[in-house]
Length: 265
Image 1 (cartoon, rainbow, N blue to C red):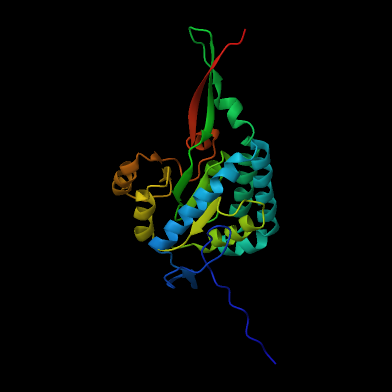
Image 2 (tube, rainbow, N blue to C red):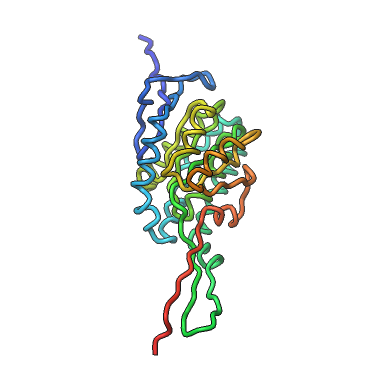
C-alpha cells in the first residue's frame, strides 16, 4: 500500500515552543501554508522575550558564546535541508560561519567597549556595556537564512532577547532555524520568530511599549512610520547593513553604563 506523507506544518516560534497563530490564520508562501501571526502573537512573543531576558543576559559572556557555537553546530548538521530551501550550500555555509564569528566575539565585546575613565577626584570611573533589553527586528526579504542570522546574531551575542519578524515571502528558512534554536540550549523565549504579513506586524512591534530597541536593517523602503512609532517610548532604532558582520553591529544593541566607585584607603 502507498502511504500519504506527513505534511509539515510551519508554525510560529514563541517562548521555546511552536504554537499556531492564536487567530488560526495561515498564508501561502513558498508553496506552503505558513502561520500568519497576529497582534496577540506579537504581544505573546514580547512577553516571552521579557521573561527570558534575565536568564539569557545573566549568563556569562563565555557561556553565551558556547550556546551560539552550538547553534552553528546544529545548523551545519542540517546543511542539506537548508540548502534545499535557500537554493544551495553557499548561503548555509555563510550563515554557519557568521554564527561562529559572533560566538567568538561573545566574551570579547566587553573588553573592546568598556573603559576606565580618568576623573578629577578620589574615584574609579568605569564604563561597561549592558544589553539594551528586548529587541524587535525585521529580517531581510532576500537571503532568507543568512539575512535573518545576520540580524539575530549581533543582537543575541550581547545578551538581548529578540522578537524577529521573518521574511514574508520566504519564511521557511527562518522557521527551520527556529527548530535549530530549540535544540541548541538557547533559553526558551530568548529568541522568538514570527511569520506573517510585515505591514501588519511591524507597526505592532515598533509601537510596543516593552520593546527597547528596533532593528530596521531588513526594512525595504521608507521606515519613517516605524521610526515615529518607536519614538513613542524612545526606543533605540538601528539601521545597519542587512548582511553586516562587525562587532559594531553587536555594539549597536548594547547600552554603556558608567559606574563610580570611591577609591579605598
